[in-house]
Image (cartoon, rainbow, N blue to C red; front, side, top):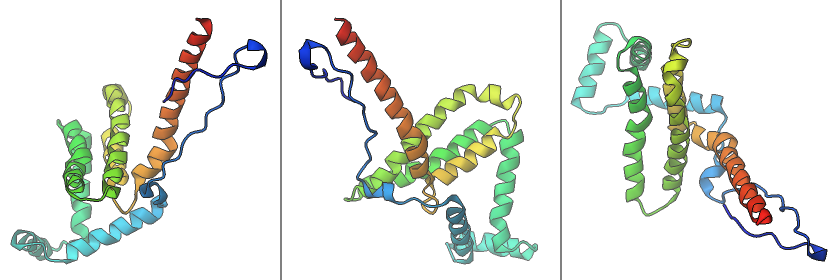
Length: 201
């Protein structure tokens, strides 16, 4: 954001404020646009592959127990999601669970990104946290929204997962289409305000 004095027009009059163009980031993270449907399919496939692999004694024993009672490994993720969805509607700490979904794994992944020498993964999580901050503002109205739409926390939790999953890259799309244009709009209005203020002076 810049508050530069526009150059004078011929004849001593003040020139109109030059139109601004929304800048595009040169960082590689913004080149990874994934169609939502394709990203969800990839995430589902990766989840199924994850469940088929070994992840330690506790995980393996849990999977064996699930299979012994007739629950296939692929169905375990759906069962967990269903239980979480029910709690997000009727649970007393639905807001807390929703926020944990939104910043639990991203916080862990952000710490790992900070430890690396490269900056590409840092950019990915910086984009996510910027989107998260914008969405968090909506929580100010959460009680009002819940009064007529009880599925608010389910949709919010699903959307947050969509934003941060590496398969979906949803935060890049949300940033490009919502957050950055919003900040650019505010930026323009601030520039116009200071420009008009200087003209009056």
